[in-house]
Image 1 (cartoon, rainbow, N blue to C red):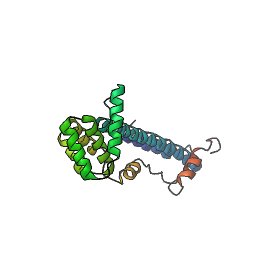
Image 2: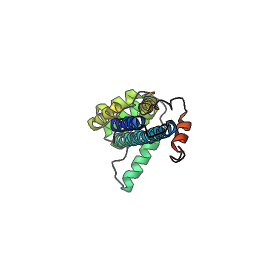
Image 3: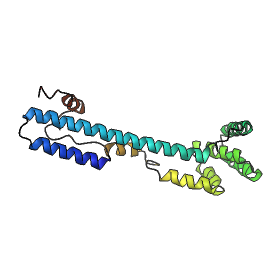
Image 4: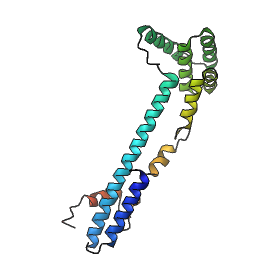
Length: 191
């Protein structure tokens, strides 16, 4: 179920509980707490699934932009490791730019990619842009990365989490989440 379906089912369940006069007031509270607790857990599962999918997408794009092309050839692995070590030693964007230019001129894609990855880590956007200018596949992956939710928005995770919060029904709204979950755990026989 998606968030709208979960919220709609929750509201329908609350309406049935409130309209059923066979329940005592306490039983209505317990049942409403159970409905809220269950719907909250379902919403949290949807949120966690969305975050996992987003993380997986970011990981795939990161590998597409800066990672291995899945070659397990020992020579390629050593070349990538050597290039990464050389790029990691760079501490000046001007020198990194020069190294990137030389690597591209010499056709050393492995070193060029390593320099771009290092520049990205340090936020040297001019160098990343320089690399993207000569690599359309990288540029497309970068555009897709930048279009992902949360990119460049430091408050996105908080806003995202808040969009999955579920309002407690009246009668429970003064309870903390812990108290509402504890009420939901009560046995209906006692209610």
